[in-house]
Each structure stands twice: as C-alpha cells, then as structure tokens.
Image 1 (tube, rainbow, N blue to C red):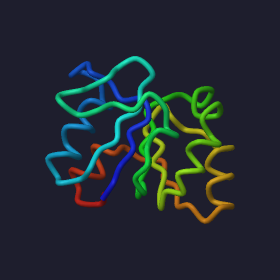
Image 2: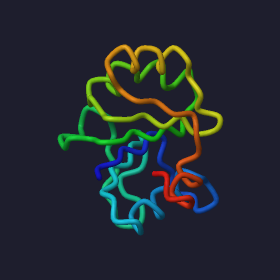
Image 3: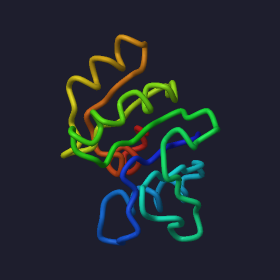
Length: 119
C-alpha cells in the first residue's frame, strides 16, 4: 500500500516519525511530505504533495486544520482511497469534501490502527 504522510518529521519523538517507521516495518511504501526535509532515515521526502507521482492509497495527516485547508486541493487531487485524520489534525471541512468525492475518511491514530491490525 502507498501511504502519503503529510507533515512528516525527522524528530524521533514525533508521531509522524513513528508512523513512517512503523508503516515501513509493516511493508507499506511511504511518501513523506514536508517543505524543509529532503530525507528521513534514507527515505526521500517530497517538498509538495503534487510532487508525488505514484497512486496513493492512504493519506495520513499530521498537520493542523489551517495547514490541511491550504493543502486540500492537492490532497484531493491524489484521489486516495482513504484519509486518516490523526489526533490534532481533525478537519471537518476537508472530511466533507473528501467524502463527497467518494474518499473514505477516519478520525483515528495511524499508530493505533497499525498496532491493532486495523490499518
């Protein structure tokens, strides 16, 4: 599965960093997105969502609603199967837009979903 991590971090104590590690360990292809980082643990980081050319199955968000509002068009243009709004990343307007386009949405923690076999 191809997973875009919006708000990826190179700081080991951040949940987005842990998600990158655990997603890779579970065999998923990760596409971290961050405007500053070029690489995290040897994984290429995309400066912009629109730079991702692969079909994305899941977008997992680690940014606040103001940031995701500004990225909404790019996120929706990926046409993911699902968007995960991690705690602190809830965005009801983006959820509504995504659902109108047939994209599943969930307000949940990627780490918990992975740990419980629900990812």
